[in-house]
Length: 441
Image (cartoon, rainbow, N blue to C red; front, side, top):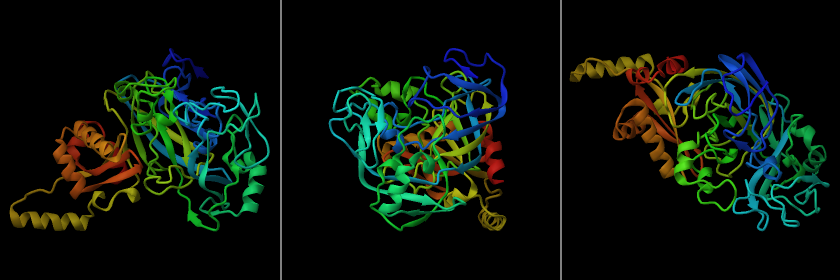
């Protein structure tokens, strides 16, 4: 059942909640939640392609089409929720992506969340699809070419039956997919986006690659209504002083965002993500599933797909974090952040005895997410968050990330992971040790 924005925690909590509905691109206190799901319960989602399809659908106001948020029973402002990503399965047969070209005259300051029809001037206009190709998106009122974006360089990519490899397609195949775009995209029944396969891009042909799906958007709802794709410090900075209806001040952005738009490729099956709660009930949501991505998402976009996701949620009372904390699967940890093997610990103990060190520190990995308008400010944000969480100095976090970790780029221009081995007593003091033990011990 749906919970209206004002009523969280007032209905019976469900052990499993199924989600197949989507927002109009907005998140926040004005968006009704489903559920609630019980503390310790599961949420099963059918997700849409998150990015390019919504980008060419002006009626979607946030740049992405994310799943409707779910309330978590017992989650209150100042808490956190731990999200175990149990399973991610790609259902799309193919998708299209590439670097974008905003279309001048078709948006009010921001093509992701303030599109304007160049023909009749309507904001967030409804559209229809006429044929295939980059001029196929037409205003339902006046018939004008109304897409806010086209490709600067684009490709169509198909996937094998096991969803293990992908191959970029030539023009003939791309146009075949375009004519049956909803089927090849496996669009969920309640999705309203124009599928990006309609554009049939084919600038790169015969490039093979591997699939490793993850969630570009996953987290808790912000405490002010904002476009979903802007719920992060880099994209969110475009809202500061903007000319459109979703403009925010710098202080409002910092206070209310939850950094759910991560595009971190380590947010995949097996990982544990800990998210801040800034609304009663948390408003857990996800979307923007990607079939694959290199660190940084340097093209600005990657292979958006439909799929199914299963999550398990737990409430952490009073953790009070400002942004996400990640416990990646061990294979995704930087070399220096990986827990020491028993042989390495034995050698370290022997070295310590030689120089008067009686015990080797017990430490386990943690990855703290930082965001900002650029990579420097995102790194500073992640360092400060890690220091506050673990009651360490920023200088010590810098040193640990240098000699027992790494700074990893999630999304260029401004999402990073500050990953390092932290003292286990500091992890225990903040209530996160059990997740590090679960993942790495």
